Length: 178
Length: 198
Image (cartoon, rainbow over all chains, first blue to last red; front, side, top):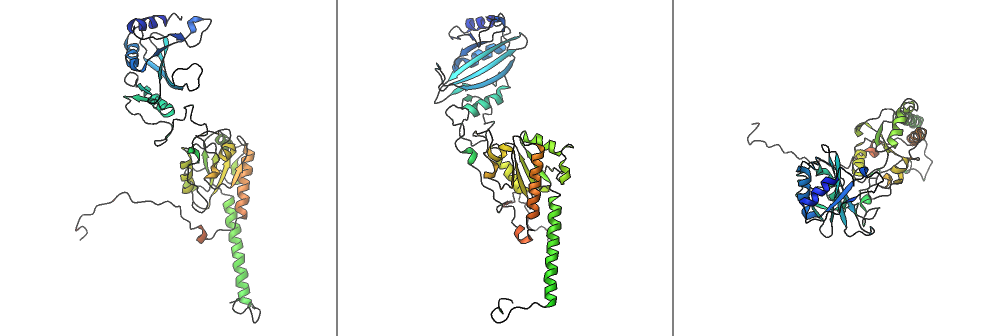
């Protein structure tokens, strides 16, 4: 295990002894100091864990460098449908941690981390737009890439690549009408 | 006059009538020629550049290829001053209404070049978000092939538009009066006090 992140994970396990974090490296590498580690959290415990990671000075993850959604439909050995991945970076302690949350249909909901990292606003809107994972307590959960009124969530694996006719749905302008 | 007397005797043109007809024909021809000539040599493009085709469009405007040789160097970013829409690049579903609005705002007479594979057919972007050819929803005059087309190809497209303009009969004002199909409703109502102006 990477020397820098070990104390953080041990701290997490000590603080939240009821959660199985299942810590694992994203990719096993020869040089273990370069490995990046990932912990898994349930949606109900996410806010407690995230607040701890942000506020405790031994963790001090000041920056949420990325927030992404994943659809695990037809993914080998996947138990849950949707995943939301948080990439945390601590500039003062110089370490990184990945946090994953899994949610399922029919009502995929994850608490919003906007109150902890304000930069999550647009990223959470993007995940809502593309995957339909709803973020509770988000201050302004509108679609960000498609328009209001667009019904689907296009990055879901069961959404057809060529769409459901959205690209055909315009008025036709002829030489006479223009 | 000719139809009424058709049965009995052939219609004979008087000398004056003959001269007037020929003269008006000649004036019409000159007007058509000169107006078409000026139109085709002063096409002002509307650069609707959404992707890499736009870079080639810029190269076409730059000194090496120099679209000014064809009088089309005046790229205007307001549709009111343009008569040639160059649709360069893929058009996303959110951009299509914008493109249509810009086209409708252009002044008559107007022409459209669909530049490159994406604008003409959607190209490799066969996804929900990309319109598969702007000609489904807009009247396109000339398609320029390529991915992206070289500046020479685009110049060929502009020359094709010039030939179109040259061969097109001059549209008379009655035909041209089509309107934009846009209706602007007044949204502000000024309340006038009772008894004002008395």
